[in-house]
Image 1 (cartoon, rainbow, N blue to C red):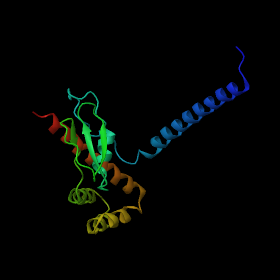
Image 2: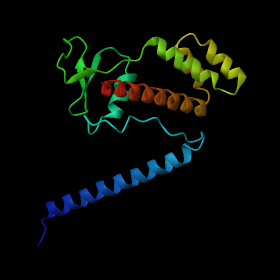
Image 3: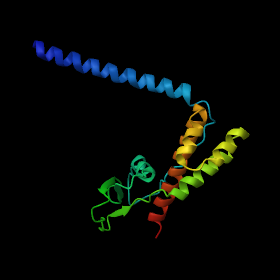
Length: 175
């Protein structure tokens, strides 16, 4: 079968995209290999695997919803499909039994996370600076000087969010 010039161009373009995606995946894997060895590996908390009512729950969406502190969007978990539904906060809430409002992080829980993280820092001077930070902005400025501490903070924050979401899912499944 003979290919037209346009068809050859399409095949070449698809091949180029595939090779580009493969190379990007390879670079990402290499980056993760090089940059995740700074901290000991810990098993990330996961949602319970015994959720018979939901075959799959969008844990990444739940974590993003939990960490979103903008207040502009209300997030709901569709308990039948396991997907996270975004809903404008100004609209009336979803009251159907199918939807459960995803809990939001509070300012107090964010402050508790900052204190818990700071207490684990071995560098006494940095620990004191972090404990004295008045708000989240001051805390972020303090950790921005050390990339390893900054990465550790975001990993810590994500792990705490994952734990909170897993507990919330278990509470939904409880009779």
